[in-house]
Image (tube, rainbow, N blue to C red; front, side):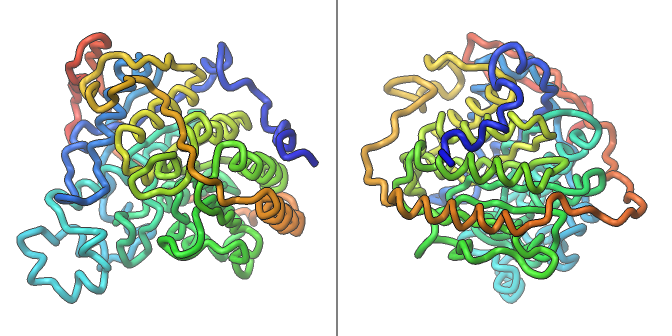
Length: 429
């Protein structure tokens, strides 16, 4: 089968043009999120979320979506996955008190990669509340929900990992499972989505598919032979990749694999983690994807017309992260954005070209055609061993997570000025 044509079945609807208007999209943003600071020299910079938002405003995308301020996740929301004592620790620890809690810091893996910083718990509540809020919106009929502050896929039940403290993805999937028999998780971050895979490793109600760098690379998991366990056997798919993978090679795997997944698993909802550290030129990454190549994954998953939650994740060359997530918001809306960038608050970050797209490098692609063919064959073979669309025994549905009515942010958008869109929100977090 020609891999370039294998995914044709997913293109049930065009991704740009008039049809894009039929997708009802909501977007979660808290204007405080860019203020959180992991510390000097730390590669994770929440400021990139504010830069993304500024681009969305100047491209005129905010007035095409329902813009919502997330309600912070409460302790009981976070404890649907995380251990009570871990959440209690995150709530109480501060930069001033951390030296008195050395044993707890070690126990919960909080320290260098995952530092204690001012407002840490509020930051977790905000990004997790937005992802769960997005799941609630999808459960009530919206087509696409976006939370670029989410996608922190490494966090475990009892510990922080890889810049991630609370696993908003697991929490959002648990919310989606209240309304959907099956939920698909897809991860295009350069790092393996280990926290999400581990959480659902033994169930057939969640399939996890991760495309990632493998081999002497954090977190060290995600071998093609890791396929799930017990009822979850064959419901974990891992696509291990090498340095320098380009758009064509990536799509030669992504489309045929995801086409088969959608055919066999038939999910009621899809969660797509759009980590931008798989882009060419990332500070911590070693792939060679263009923004269009990365966004092709969003476009393809959108084409199945299944409720879709788009989340952020990694991404450490922040000017390119903002470019990518702005462009992918346009894809969600069915809008092709002009390459020439409008003047915006962070315009100087995007010089000297001031364009939305950047050319990939000429780095070597270490993924040979033979290796890619073998990976694709192996994974398609694993998928052929699945029974189609596992059924779930009927049981009473747990109640939805209830937040106060999610406040709408009325934005004053000055597209042609460098001023920040100002939020007049009736419900402050």
